Image 1 (tube, one colour):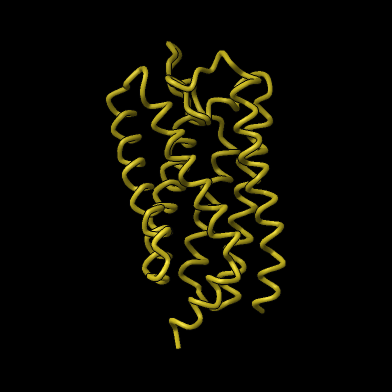
Image 2 (cartoon, helix red, strand yellow; image 1 turned 45 degrees about the vertical axis):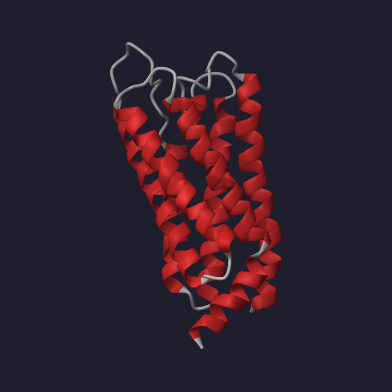
Length: 201
């Protein structure tokens, strides 16, 4: 079973890489959406918007693979957390975000998008702490967990006060940390599987 999950590692890394490259490229393809006052989700609007949608679904697939591997190694709770994150990304890709700095009223799709985004980000934070608590020997996991929750809180606060030159950067800092965390746990998947199994004995 461990070898089976290790094989899934490369597929998971592939989809995380699609997410990263898609979001990174959109910063150049859509320069009018400045990082300061636009969230990454807003790239789904207008030209090249389909790339952002693809990015969301790529991360959904990556989390489905992580959930499947976690459940197969009898860690059902972590598997459920990854599944919830996957549902969040599916929702993000299905319902297009509103333009934050805009005179147009909020749409129903935009509100649903915010809901799924909050669920995905909150569950990522929870998962970082759960995984760190299970594998106490890996200090990097605790650094990721603490960094994620701090950057998440800063982003939520900046969104609520509608800081015109900050919330976009705050979100990108959070997403950068979370994306590196996804790469990290996937690359070390085989080691984590062994450590989690040992912790249960």
